[in-house]
Amino acid sequence: MSLGAKELLDASLIYSYVLAAMVLLGGVIGFIKAKSKASLIASTCVAIAILALDYVTLKVSCIYGQSLQIALSISLTLMFRGKYQASGKDLEEPLAGAPKRKFMPFGLLTMM
Figure 1 (cartoon, helix red, strand yellow):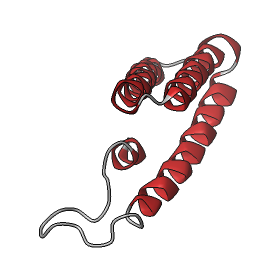
Figure 2 (cartoon, rainbow, N blue to C red; figure 1 turned 180 degrees about the vertical axis):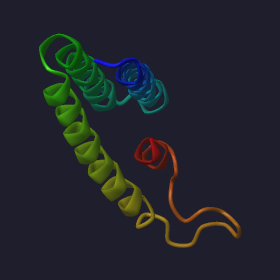
Figure 3 (cartoon, rainbow, N blue to C red; figure 1 turned 180 degrees about the horizontal axis):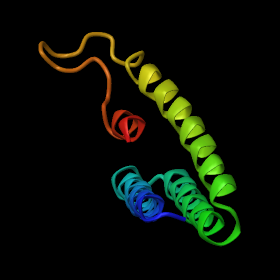
């Protein structure tokens, strides 16, 4: 592995750790604000999956690990995109100047 590839892998792993922490934090916030056990359980499962795929990337195969991480990211993006689009259907007439859809957490996680 060349020096450039190792640096790219390190950056990818740091991004994965940050993403796993943010997903877990979002679940904790959802649990605290809305008493949503489902949010806490789902975010914990996704964070563990992200960290498990980091292990696969490092110890088993870089190609398989990164491919599975991409597949997980795409599936989460599609899920959060659907939830974001559905969040505006509840709002009949928002206040003037207020957004028509809830940005958090769906919009933020889709952008990541």
